[in-house]
Structures are given as structure tokens and as C-alpha cells.
Length: 158
Length: 413
Image (cartoon, rainbow over all chains, first blue to last red; front, side, top):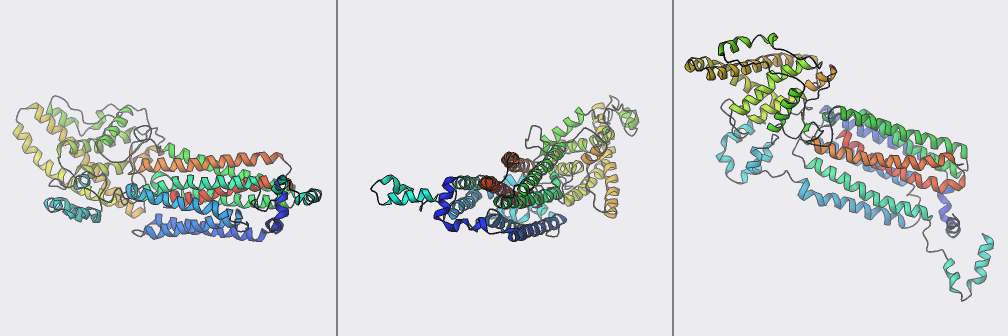
């Protein structure tokens, strides 16, 4: 505690956010968060109703963007990082966030793309109906021409 | 403080190096507790990023359309939205608590804090309801164990389906006797078969065993093919099994078309087979084994045919009466039956594993946050406590932050 007092003495700027009343800002942020939630929920409901059928990616993109906006609002205002003085706030948040991003990217080749290629053997025994464009990846070799029936079935299904 | 500084100044020009260390210019402009908490939060960012990232990669790496939609696994958007609102509201009141503490307004601070605490409890309560709902429907993260979700509608699925039905006391209605004619005569009259009435869902289970499971077993045993090489009537094992699985637990907008096409193929096959049967019976002559087999086959075909007939009518009714998301499991539930039949939900177990892991870790963090808020409930929340409230608040906001990402990913995608 005494540490803090001494620090405050040497950094008069620091007392800033303590003395200022951010009450109005907080209410605005709160309302902003509620609006963002409403947008996400609306899009989610539309997706489940099938409005985004075949175009889900754009819906998901909007929702993730809205989530990022919400996260920024919470970090900057509720966690008052906006009013913090010093470089430490960048030191502690940016590397960790970057690492989070790379963590996901590292998983993509082996796990994220694990079902992008089907061997014909695997496609034949797949538990799912493999969409035509996935199955057409098989077309790189001649197997599909041999298994004419299978190809026909896939075309029928779509 | 001023005394201290005077003392400091006096010795600044001294050669005594110890006093030089009293220069605090290079220290962080925040208290040590907050530094530590932010350090901790930055590790937490990576912790949750690992979990959320894994979920995202698994979710979007699943073959197109094979990840369960929220409604397939009883994820309720409404409960999720309420919980989101609760957490945002509690984050807001934490901020108000801190402001009140800084103003030395202990009374207000205490009531804001109590409200925050209640919000946290409400969040956990709703989470509990959600978990219980999933467990009730057999959605567990343990394939081969207590989980009733099956990745594929394959022979293992069919075997477990048969086992569940047998354990529940369902008996196939086609009784085979040594006398082929007797067996054939017995079949249409189903009332003669003894029914053990232990479970309110019993008649449904028997009908299902009779009309669907036996049929699927018949197809797998008699109709050799694979997906790529369906037999002449367009029947293939996988699609028949999938359409049977849809009778138990229809997936949201997934297999409707496939089921319909399969039913047509079944109808076609059954008709041609039933036409061929009398000739085979005539050819069998006095061979009782063959006659029995043919009679058995006839019962299975006829049972399936009658199912397809009923289903056709159901389907028309559905289209007229709006969307209907039911299935056998839902009907059993309405009858208060204790039986839940195995469900075919592609990637369902992967969903359950990630869902329970992520929301579970998040709930743990909520519990920790509640413990952090429980202590100051017994304190006077004056200015001297503002550091504690600030740090506990930072932690709570982080918990809110994680939920901001979990909510759309699990409830809305």
C-alpha cells in the first residue's frame, strides 16, 4: 500500500483515473455491449432459421467481429486499460494475444484441414455424405472414372 | 510522507548508495498487486486461447455440415443470451463497486458488490440447468461410455441400438416357428405376442424394433454394397442406417432429403422383393428351413412397408402442420420413459468434449471470481480497499471477456 502511495507521488498522472468520474462512459459502454449482444443473437437466430443457408461464413464472421468489438470495449473501459499510463499494458496484452493467434494457425494444417482430402477408400466408407466438390478432389486420379456408379450417386444427391 | 521525503532529500547527496534506491522513477506506475494480476491475466489469455483455438479448429475442420447445430445438442440460445446479459451486467456493477469504493461510499459499494455476487450465482445456476439438460438427453463427453452419441450410423451403432432395445425388454414381433405356414399366419396378428409392460415407452420400442431395427439388420445382412456402389435399387447400408437413426433423433435440417430418397429406394426394393417371394416359396417346396427364412423375410419387408406407409402420411401432416422436431427419443421422453436410444450425431462427442471443457473451465473461473468477491462482503469497502476491488474486478472482467467469445461460438454458430 505504501508502495502505491510513493508511486502515486512520483507519478501525478496516475491519480487521474481515480479522480475522474467515468460514470457516463461506463453506462455508454454497458449499452454498447448490450447492443452488440443483440446483434450477435439476432444473427445467430437467423442462421438457425436458415436465412444464411450456404452462406454461414459471413454470419460467423460478423459474430466474431462483434465479439472482438465487445472484447475491446471491456478491456479498454471496464478494465480501464485505456486510461492506464505506461508501456506495461502493451507488454502484457499484445504478445499474449499474438501467441493466441499463432496457436490457432499452428493447428490449422494438421487438424483444421484434416478432412480436406479423401482417398477414394476413405470416401467410400465415410460416415457422411461427402459434398461433390470434396469428392471431386478424387478426380485428380482416374479412380472416379472407374467407379462411375459412385460418381453418379453423388451427382444425384446434389 | 513529507517527513520521509525530507529525510530522503537530506541524504540524496550522500555517498550512501542505499538511499539512491529510494528513487522510484523507474517503477511501474501501478501497484504490485495489479502488475501480478495483469501478468496472470496474460497467461490466462493464452490458456483460453489454446482452448478456444482448439475448438475453432476442430469445429471448422469437421467435414462440411457434420458439426451438430446448437439445437441438435440441446444448446439453448435463450439461456445463453440470458447468461451473457447477466455477465455483462455484473461486469458493469463491478465497475460501479470500484467507483463507489474510490469515493469512499462504503454502503453503495457493498450493495453493488452483493448484486455482482448474485449475478455470478445466477450465471452458475443457469449453467447447472444447461448441464443437467444435456445429461438428461444422453449428451456426455465420453464415447463408448455413458455418451449416447454415435459418430457414425454403422454396425456398431446398430448393435448398441439392438442391445438398448433388448435391455429395455422389447421383443421382435416376428416369432419363427418350425412350421412355416404357422409362422406366416402368426405374423399379421401381433396381439398374441407377450409384451412386458415395464416402461411406458414399451409399445413404441417394440414397434421400432419390429419396423426399423430388424429392417436395418436385414439390409446389412442381405444387401451387399458400399456407398459408392449402391445395389440396383439404390439401397445402401449407410443411408438406410442414417435414415433409421433419423427416426430416433432427427438432426436439424441435415438428413431430410437423404431420408426421403432412401425411403423411396426402400419402397422400391420391398415391392420388387415381395413380388419375387411367392415364386421362391414355390421353388422351396417342402424345405422348412428355406420356408421359415422366406416367411421371416416377408414379415420384415411387410413391417417396413407399413412403416413407410405411416411415415408417408406423417410427412404430409408435417408439411401441413409446420415444422416438427421430434423423433422417437422425444416421444419416449413425453411418455416419461426412462429409455434413451443411441443417437447418431456426427462430431457430437467432439462437440461435447470441447463444450464441457471450455464452459467448465469458464465456470471454474466464475467460481474463483465469486470467492474473490465473497471476502469483501465482510469488509467495510472504503478507499483503502479499492486496490483489492480493482484487482478482483479485473479478474471478473476477464471472465466476462472469455464468455464474450464462448457465447457465439457455442450458442449461435
